[in-house]
Image 1 (cartoon, rainbow, N blue to C red):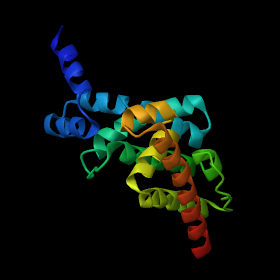
Image 2: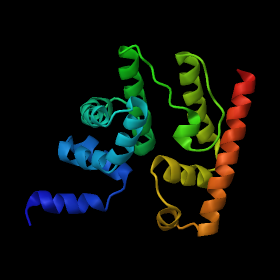
Image 3: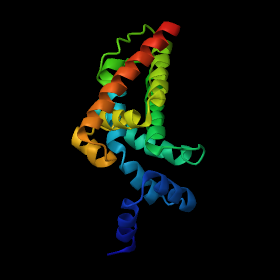
Length: 193
């Protein structure tokens, strides 16, 4: 077993925060690549939702790694996967803006439950996306974690049970209650707007 294989095996046991810390300490792109690779499916999924083209989404995944190299050192990152999601979304929005053909991904399609949000212009759409992110942050931690794993990371109930240690009934309850709370928060946001 060579050094790289040993290093990769060691890094597999580290959580995202530890791997990020290791990268920031060593500046070893292999470490950052391993961290990014853990989340490329989510990155591709978000890119595909916004760009609506598989090839463009694949290109965006590659371009985002290059952007990641620069931005990861300049920003304070509390939770890597959440930060990466926002980076990915913003990257896609900038691409669409530069092409002057902003595509709308409805909240209903994105989070897969009725949000009834159909804003007319780009600014309102971006405000709605920001509101969704803020609403996600208001959820109790167990609901937020379950919603994140189920919708953003596309994990099934059993996988969420394995990851979190919650019971199957708890996972179902957290997702159901989280969806209801998100819908209420988004409804409140629309009423204030």
